[in-house]
Length: 104
Image (cartoon, rainbow, N blue to C red):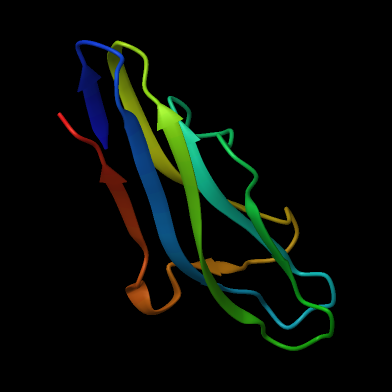
């Protein structure tokens, strides 16, 4: 989602409602959050989930951040990362939604 700001005077309220599912493996984990001007780093602490036992873990939450947007062109992204080992699923149930609210 792109944002173009002429004068820095308002705060953007950004939230990412998400659902994910791990594989049935102990420690299978996912991270989800919001990126500001980046698709590979998080602007705020990410939401982390890890399966405590070898069962499928279906989770969901909302990550949020308030950002005083500096003047210029910016973008907001819904970032996700897996544990690097397991084939975890993001967008489980196709319910993920990225919201940005600003007064323009």
